[in-house]
Image 1 (cartoon, rainbow, N blue to C red):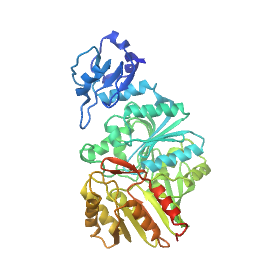
Image 2: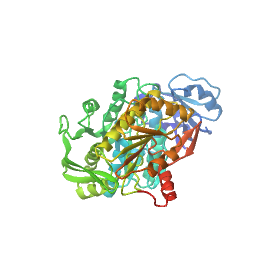
Image 3: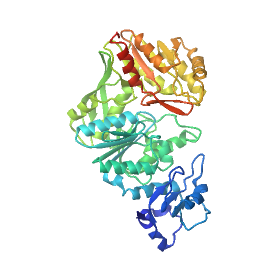
Image 4: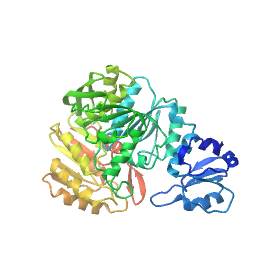
Length: 501
């Protein structure tokens, strides 16, 4: 139990009115912001305005179920004896209440927040590998899940709701972590999920058009502005100065400004990390890349995953890690072992061809990945993918066209059909496929499609399983069925009894 006085003492200017002093001693048993969560006697209910539902309309029901305090932006009407606390912004209030409820755990961690359109997940894991190689204990919150020690907790959003974030922080502190590495999405910033947290290091990877329209961002300018909010709340900003939008990120930044990149552009930053001498590496079915880095720290490193863009991710990770270690051997050893689930993740099954799993599920991402793999000059580039149901049809046409133009063989299959028929989705994809000259085949069952590309693999092939990435399910008619591509590959390989080229 905690008192209302304790939970609101750091509220500052988001309170729009002062309640009766005596009522500040009201005890609170839990914080509830989701109407699906059970309310118990003494709960504080936070009225959140969502895209489809306004929590203010549930205030009466919350009091009826035992809530003793209601936090609201608007007037609420109910029968009962609950305390109403009026605030200017209930999302910000939830963030501050949650931090207080868990005893301000972020202040007990070194906090690293990453924002950008691409590369956040991979870079998080690169940073984690280096810092843990250097002796620190790290927790991660991001697209792939929340990682605390050897436990992984599923997160439905890249940046969870503020209460969940603070709860994860507390779990990290209790588990002995000293460092948090976190993907901070534009939506998370827009909805104040990290409000009140001052990040020790705020990182910008890159920016391109994404998450625009619907309930996300009305235009690119809002998307960019929301990203920039992270840099108003940091002690040190570390930004990709190759990206033209890095100055927009730093407009209201009052912390130390540092940069990284391949162009050598160090305008507006006090420290810069660059790189050179890139070398594509391909041997025994494994693709990688080597590079040198120089600036505040100088050394060389090698990645066991392909792509020049991963060099940018690694540069970013080194720039962050240089605040914790300057041991280039530690950095090199850590980066060589980086494999991120579902991000150009290699699945080694043969010395004669390469198999990779990647999350690319839109045309831009797929084009980037296929361009990257084409640079390694494989004998054949094989792309297996599908598209999600109940999503934009344009994505289907575009991905089909990109794959047919860039891959030697396109295998069109199912992804998450949701409430659509897989055959209808595949038909849409084939409209785009028809605009390219690559060979193609349709195999609706994804397991059968994966078996096909493995059985028909040729020496020198590079096979990409695109779209599912880190997901371990397939969603059909509202039900998520277990489906992990790594397990599928392992089962197929076992059934072939070593009969793979």
